[in-house]
Image (cartoon, rainbow, N blue to C red):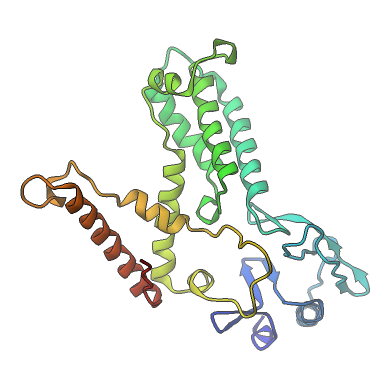
Length: 298
């Protein structure tokens, strides 16, 4: 793999990235078909020197593109053409050619519901208190649902599906049928609970962001670096602004905490100024970590 360092890949923040390696799982990255074929040839040649062979049946190609139909990419190993996929699973996460997380989130929801059904005898047992069952749900089911959520870019549609999944769990734990026509607010009151799934995801994303900014490794480079080239035509895709939204939601101003108050009763404009100052301090901290200039808009 050392021979790949000088090979062309994708420029991110001025650095060349052409491979991602985790144990024996390797991803080769290039901007075009010729560069990708060159990378694969080097890996194949070096592997042959060590007595290793690349399995063409287990090696796949995928093109990340905004187009509805990704361009064709013909890559070969020993004259064997590799299969081009629209999606594949890498380290337990589904990667799709459109670069979105919709398929991954839908798969996580399906896995979580399957696991819930396997533990149905416990989770729907009325002889066990609802608080205990919620803790079991949080311990055994939520980790399956939220695997890899730190890297999700959640659209409004997928956020609604996640919230619906959260209510799906509670309704079955309380054995509430849809024919009873109970609202979600009523179900939450009966379960002595509140919606917390989206907040948990945002908190995980904010925690992961802290690790990324402190380590300053490949994740930091991808998060803060810029790609060479121009933006495509049309509306820009939704970015993972969940990082900043998560910080804004978790580090929100606590009006009930005296340590955050000034003396006396804070007026409305004072609270607004304090919240603006609090948000500015957070952004300055992040910009110091990322070494990015702070841009303020009126």
